[in-house]
Length: 421
Image (cartoon, rainbow, N blue to C red; front, side, top):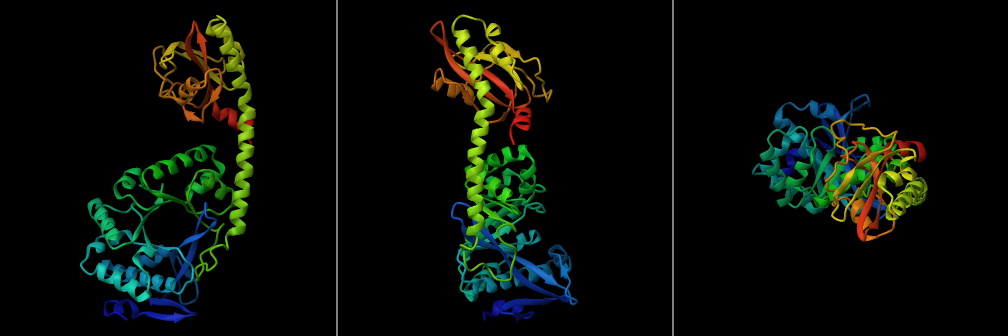
């Protein structure tokens, strides 16, 4: 055993084939929870988690374990001893893939200590595992010294560890931190899984969050997945990895059969395919009247009617917000025609479609110009004109040999709540 590791082995002992620690009248031990890749339908990693039992066998919550540490030196010993315990226990596993290890926020300064690399190297050498096998999870919420934090992350990378930003979306997490430290993985807080299951707005937002994180060059993991529906929502959002009780509860041994999650992954894929097809069919069904109505209005305008004269086929439909017209540069011609039942949900954002406003960067204009005569529809988005979540139907026609685009906004929140399952 390397001499530098001896202080962290003094309290250890073997129990049921696993290394444990005796510390402050607690028995500390490792458990491992599988992390799956949706695309590969297999276990690709495990998170090593700390557990503790009191003398009478009662379990002690992890935050209460660290609360028993007296001062930074005590905390540093506990952190290193438990990490060594996790690494040794992981080395006994035949499971391939990575192991995620947590780092206490108060210890980022220790990453810059002169002996840190020696301790880290000794742990890996002793267990026969390379640093690249491990991903260090960091939580930024309690960090106050941001410069030292970023220096610590740089140090971890120099030592060969992967970096994961944990609990993103909880507390003070923000995208600025992602841009600066460029983690290999961002772990979305479990609250996303819970909220997305019952909140349509969160289900719309989740793919956008995943997309931004992918643009920043990081993979995305959703924690706390406990149901088939939550797993499907994560897959729909183009999230890379999943973790939670649906795939496997924490256990003392890592999963040896990486394809053991195949039954639940097959169920997710089957559900996702079924729901995706149903969702597409339902969306086509509910949007069909609006696409037909905008097409009819366009033909009437092309034959010489004014927008007001041609608007009835569209404005009389339920959930309609407004109708308006753009020239070939995307500039608005006249003001919008509001449906009798339309409303502005947010006063600040309800600016209306003002004459001369330019909408050429919007998808509804670009698509209509690319496919003349074919009615188009957008994904739901927040309209700066109405302040509502809406979809826009649009179509290009010729008036006096000049292309114009008719656009109609539909209040998506009310339509979705009433017409979609």
